[in-house]
Figure 1 (cartoon, one colour):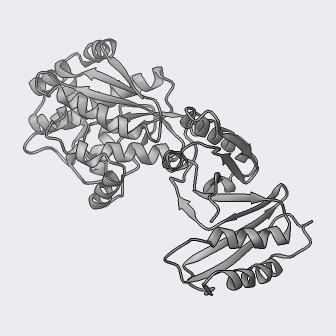
Figure 2 (cartoon, rainbow, N blue to C red; figure 1 turned 180 degrees about the horizontal axis):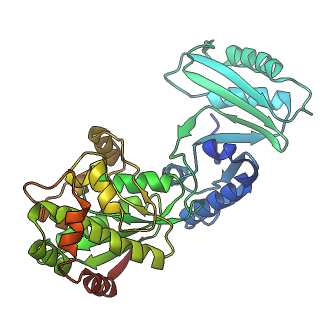
Figure 3 (tube, rainbow, N blue to C red; figure 1 turned 90 degrees about the vertical axis):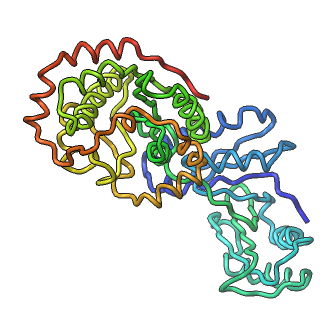
Length: 387
């Protein structure tokens, strides 16, 4: 049995980008090379439709585990590259299957992008399949085979493979600009972060801390979440905003039922200023419509008015159970449910307004100098980088 050492990267959605495809591929290759920088002997062959990685003597299983989490890679295959010679193709197909166990049926597929190769795809299949039948104890099943022998005849040679591994998909990190994620430490915002990264968006994160009301362990929790998200974005900045003074003033001067609405408006005001300063094009969060009082459409409309940047909510219409499933898949769920609450949870009122009146909000806000408190909070932001 032949053991492949070349990985074929498949683009998936990138293939639809037309004239911009080259830029997307170059960004993807840059991200791949950064993720695999410790593997010094590997070689890259960048083509229009695929990227090929010759892993040489490196640990191919480790490399595959890293590649599976890189946004922009739809799938990958372990391939054998040979010269485009029909006798060699037949021999290699047989050698690939020797020693395989647990399979009873097979199917041969072929793509011939190199039209100068004199044998058509269907004829290649008709020549390879009998060779396998003659040498390997398998039978043909064209509808539901246990093994697919895939042959691709390209200009630079012929590739054979029997296994394709699904990967993250989406767009390469960096092609869609930068955004600021409001990271709470709950289940939702890490999942929203992951989905945004898959769309090629670089994230910086902002968190509102209210010591001594909130536990310092919340920051450790956030660090652990971001370390999991480092699989998708290798360096993430976290801006920690001291929010205690603002929160105390809000509860001192407003009706309790409006406290969450006003608090969220203050958060958006701070996030807008920080985002613009950091060159971010949007503010993002993990809100899902109707999940809590501040996430009704009425509340969102009143809260969002204070900012000038667009707000992206990847989870707006996603069911909570589906969010939990994604959180478990990306290994953030167990971290998110650690019993350390953020400022929104600790200060949550008993009867928050789900349809806040903007006139009442403006009246409560006029009772204290929130602008100077916002400026003070921004001046005292602590920034850490997780990588």
